[in-house]
Length: 164
Length: 215
Image 1 (tube, rainbow over the protein chains, first blue to last red):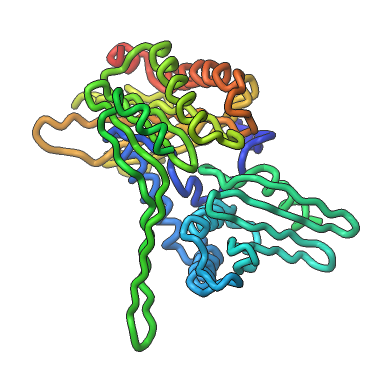
Image 2: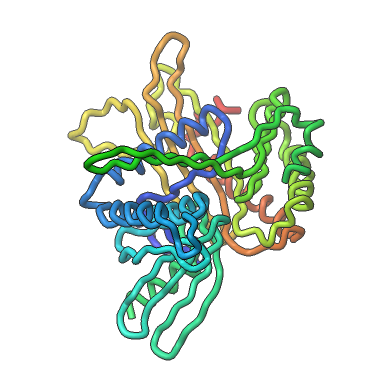
């Protein structure tokens, strides 16, 4: 039997992770990168499996084209980091509402009911600032958009809130 | 970052700026519009003779060694030197991921099967045709001893032609997420553990015959 369990401090990764492969420069590295991306593209072509993700990516593109609260469109690097984050979400997770916040960063919001939700913003460096509320508890923190999954701090909080 | 690239130019003469270029095509019922943008990310430096490539970027530092392969100690010493140069120029707030990746090419002679070379080839059910044209398998495993994960990718391309030997690529990417200061000595201890785990995975993934041919 092969046990399946998430390790303690490892990122959460869905079907389309890693969205960006760690760079390699040999012809073999390019071959593997191309084959992995080919597999990811196959998932993305399946509207059944990745329909919500495709909708979220479309919404991300829409909000990033518009002028945000600062009168400027979102930095392409912030768009790219947010896209990587969305691509790495497990398909079982609910998709967030997507908008642009007052700092011109991409804002993702999950509303799980009265006083239960999570909001995070993603900036051009891939820095995530997040805050969550659950009843009378609330907290905030920071993490990074990783290459091979979603940071345990963010993933753990989202899982707890969505199951509560 | 530019100062770090300039400082290393003597050893890495091929210097190239890295940018991220995004393009978009907007289509509605009456018009088509295009947008594009370019964001500078950093610098890539190369020493083609030594087979070395360094990527100094906003989102990370990577040192790659292609053929000819030196010893681990030589590789690590150069990585430390380059990292010191990058860290002093960029002053990274923290390190969030460490990784060590090896990509191996295992030739498949005409008479060899996948089972002859790989301990875990992709399983094919008995009723399914058995001639494999190409495959890709990937597992991510976690090792409690080193607190590291490893992405193990096995791939075979569909290649043919004169002088082309079919080959399996065995890609072992050992990594760990966490928070480290840029001068934390545990970074380098971690790489030693990563290498040990990589070796364990490498030798466990190949049959004895494949290891002999690889040596």
